[in-house]
Length: 267
Image (tube, rainbow, N blue to C red; front, side):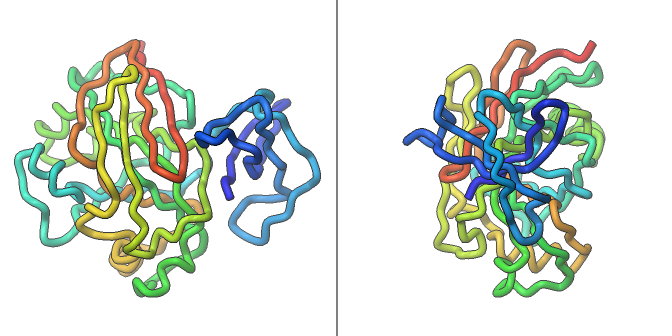
């Protein structure tokens, strides 16, 4: 099931995406079946169906926090000039960095090197504290796509990552939450890709994650309480590269969807 957050007629709601095309993309026949409430409890539809063309998709969740994992693919760690860490590198992105599908990524004046990072994002569906890996699936709502946009020059100069990854618009998320994948199963292997202006920049598989989803849920929930809607960004494969004004960047996760955003310079 694909659950989207959307606005139509000045109202914001959640809905189930129905009748996608064979390529997993919306068509003229795609609808959103409106949900009576948020997706973190029992799901019930209202009977209202909105044509996809009539709605604007928003970021599918409003997280209290975005927990990201650095250097979780060996090839990306290598391209950054380092090795895979023995323990996860954990950092936070502010909730104010979140934007949705088709929203613009704004390159800040403080940086001359803004880069894309396509990632599988795990959406937490229930309060989670000290959750063992074998129960991780019980607190996961589903998967979405994220772009961990990074001011690479500031990341290198600051000595820590808060500013470089925390600018407004630096966490595009979407297009929806896919609930039908068993992310806690190590056998679940999904392709993660990024294209810029149609050119493939990144292509990796979640089977190459150093620290898998279930293990990360256990590790992170032993440190901080995870709340419904929180996001875990699981890391990016090799191929990160620059974004400039006028670019269109698309990040995709197999079986989940495609997240597309334009790039502008902040005025």
